[in-house]
Structures are given as C-alpha cells and as structure tokens.
Image (cartoon, rainbow, N blue to C red; front, side, top):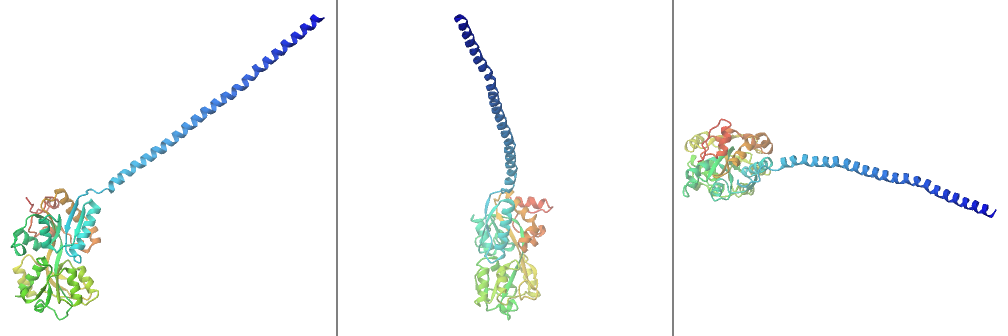
Length: 377
C-alpha cells in the first residue's frame, strides 16, 4: 500500500510539471505578435517619414524653381551699363539744366548710364570744361560750337578747340529779349539801359553782340551786366536791370517764374534789321515765339535762334555714343512727356548745320536712318 501511494504521488508531480511546462510554451506565441507589430509600426513610421521627405522634396524643388524664375527678373532690372559721365549744362534756371536733367534721368533708367548734371556758365564754359577733362558731355549752342571748332569770336585768343565731337542738335534755342518796362519796344530802345548779356564769353553774350551790331550798336551803347538766367530774372523783378537777354528754349523757367509775379514783355527784331543780322551772321535763323508762351505776352515775338546741341569728349566710346543718341531719338514721345522740348527731336534738325564732326557711334545711328554725317577721325 505504501508503495502504491508513493507511485501515485510521483505520477501527480510529473503531471503537474508537464502542465506548467505546457503553459509556458503556449504563452510564447502571445508575445510574438507584439514584437511583430512593433516591427511593423517601426516600418510604417519609416515609410511615413520617407513619404514626408518625398512630399517636402517637390516643395524644395518648387522653391528652387521660384528662385530660378526670379533670377531673370533681377537680371532684367540690372542696368546695361554702370558707366559714370559728367555733363555740363547751364544755369539752374535755364532750359539746358532742366532738359539735361531729364535726359540724364531717362538714360539712366533705360540704359544704366550714370550721368551727373552740372550747372555751368553755359556753352563756352562747357566746351572749355570738356577740353580740360571736367565733363564728358555738354549742351552748347551751335554757333558757339562753331566758334570753338574754328577758333573765332570767344575762342579767337585761345585758339581752336577740337577735343569734342557732336552727338546731335536737340531743339531750337531762341534769343529772348525780356523786359518789364513797356516803353522798351525795340532793340534801339535798349540804348543807355542796363542790359544783362549773360555770363562773360557765353553764347548769350555773343548773341547780344550780334543783335546790337545789326542796329549799328555795340556794348558801349548799353550798360552790360553779366549774370546767369536766374540772377537776371531776379534783377528784372527788383528793377536793377532794364532788359535781360536769355538764349534758351522757350518757355524758359526763369522767365515763366518772373511772369507769374511781374508784367513781362518780349522785344522783337523788326524785319529790316533781321535781314541785316542774318546776312552778317548766317548761323542764325529767324524764329517766332508764339503769343501766350508767357503769361501776359499776347503777341508773337520775332527773334533769332540757334540749336541746342549735345556734344561729347572726342574719345567717347563708340558704343556709349550710339546708346546715348539712339535712346534719345528712339524715345521722342517718352521724353516729350517729361519735357516739352522733346517734341523738337528730329534727325534732320539734329544733323544739319553742325560745324564739328560727329562721334562714330552717333554717325552709326544716323547712317541706320539714311543720314550721312561727317565722322571725327
């Protein structure tokens, strides 16, 4: 019996151990799915991250494409040329200075040329300035241009100046005899009067001399005063002078401003003396300033004109000269919107009767329009 009980106890212990072992074996598979799910979750996360990276890549590519698209716009805005040039004009109240500023601004906008506009004593000073290396460009009267190139009048003592070339005439310059005295009706009435004749040696000075000569008068018959346009207008306003001679495109800012506060009159050159003047000085032409050009001036005024001409130093780069001339004359309408004198831009007017030869770049442009000009050597 004891042996039988012992066998039974032993059998129970074996069965108990088997049951415990079976239970551990069955629990293992339950753990395996958790590991698999973790691995799968990790894989899903990697795939999601990869997908996010792929989603960002097109965005980066789009940003790069946008940057590339902006580059041409930046290049288009960049100026074609950064060349800096100095330009001599005239007094700050004259047309040379105002119109020169318009051309400089437009040229920089369209070509990138950086042109500094300088107020000066006018034509003769500008030619001397170019000769001395002070200016690269200048506006001058066509008659003074001829004096310089041929060594006459104001350049007779110093000799001919040939260190410049022509780019083209821009507009007609009228010689305006301005007074606030209604009793001064002719050039003859200027005898014994205080008359501003412009700066010493300026184009205006020689215009005055030529006009007086047509009436058999000289500077000795008047009291000459040497002032700029702006100063002479102030002197007229204050009664310090009787007449101011101003050679500039009409309307001239200094005269317009004066007419806003004082009664202004323009003195005409009569037909008889005009014929004599043109016979002795053929570089002039008769010109009529229309009534209404200035406030209170209700009658046409007959006077003479020269040409406001753009010149440059003789060694100006051919491409630069071509760019300046083509930009100005190809954009007449745009320039006219900025300044009324733009309306006078004309290729025939620009090239006829100019004493000095033209820059090669300017000549190239005119040749493209079937106009041949003398080219500087």
